[in-house]
Image (cartoon, rainbow, N blue to C red; front, side, top):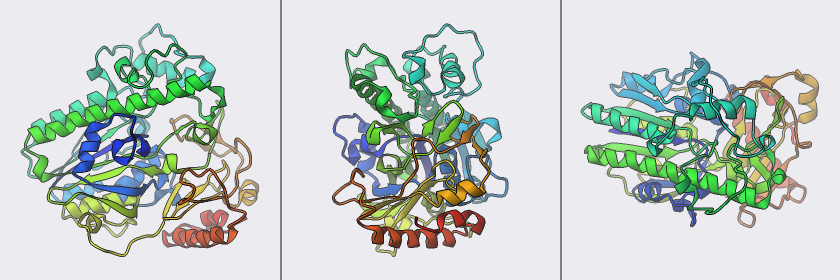
Length: 479
């Protein structure tokens, strides 16, 4: 069958009606969920944007050996295998980081289109008169990113000019031209609702009408106390407005699939890479960033608990409680396509779960930024079971003594920064989910025995993935 994979960057699971949200309008994705197998326990694996996409296209837990970097030439990738199986493969994306600066995530596709201008994409150079919508100190990278973004969107006039609209319209046009192919794989990757959050005003007015204060549309990452209560409320409204706009245009694409007579022969997958802190845990963003340095923060549920819905013609919709992760999507798509799954894949095909079969399955998920540099920037591994949420900070002292102090990263926006612990010394944390779903009451000291058992399973899991000892040594001991 045909397969359409839709990735919407930074789309929080709890901002969808089908996952229990009652105040944000997402009728199109909620409608898709009604016809899909909806996974209630889907968790991110490699974090953030670029590592996640590498998991998607390789079916591997790449945080154990890779980082925010171009797609290596020796990786076995999804699009190549599908082409060999006779599929026409197409990538349509406005997410800049997987395509700019030679990152090569177009590899293996018969064709690809990059919708230019998102975030700090080096696109428009025209002199533009612009005004920041808030004080520059409340913005992340105002000179390097926000100014470039404001140039990039300076020609925008209509809602159809917005990036998610352009991307979904381009995907719909491709379907019109290519609907007669015997089988195709269409991968649509939109950066929204990733910040900057500047949707048309009518979306914002759904959630915070009459607001007259500063609009922190590209917030600085770190503790949220630089925002007033009204600014934080409006920040959440801006994000909600973006989510509704994304839903609107994904709905446009889904309608076109139906209009073209493709609905009954096309599997549709919707997911994201991670979420975003909107004041939870006193944080905004998904890490801590200064002009010169970046430090990591704990990855709680708001970041790692992600939406995933898969609609397959002929498969009965239901809610699935099995623990699933992004590396599972490559083998799933290959099995749906009746293509061979390579031995390099570490994920598990979800097809048995889609069919409602009772199969032996994993009992935990692991979500993490790259661990190859040790915990030099406060990297933490999140491990989630049905009952426990364990955050492991690694062997910090050994890493800081052994590893270069000038280690740098391009994570989050492609700008190189020093990796550094920011916001205080990391610590191990443990939460009992049935009583504390929001991870607010750390019981690590009270339940250290549970943490030790989880840590043992974590190390065994990392070993099973073939993690090199020079990397694994910083994660072997529970301090």
